[in-house]
Length: 113
Image (cartoon, rainbow, N blue to C red; front, side):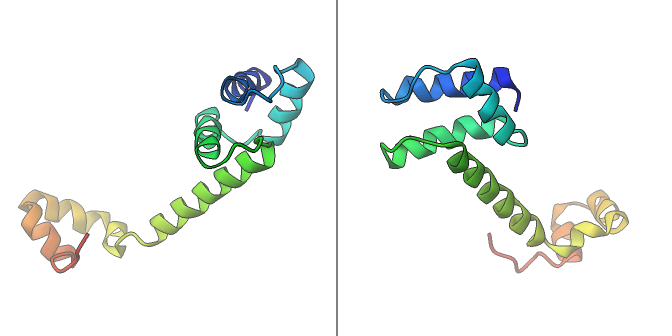
């Protein structure tokens, strides 16, 4: 996150939290350093989710924790993908034969969503 993005984030916080101060350049720089690896879209989503649950002020730690939970959930989702995705040649050949056959060949015919 850049200083400019952090300033936009802090402005978003101030728009929903009447107790939040208007952002200064120094505060924006500090938040940008702490949230350097957090995309602005994720941080804005974290702000929205935070204020849906509580009226307590949000901190960079709250946003970082939200981002980390999302990363862990995505890693778990990826780890639970069917193992058949790793054999690209088999999947490509099955794709030429149609979806019903893809499911059977990849072992997905009995899988529920």
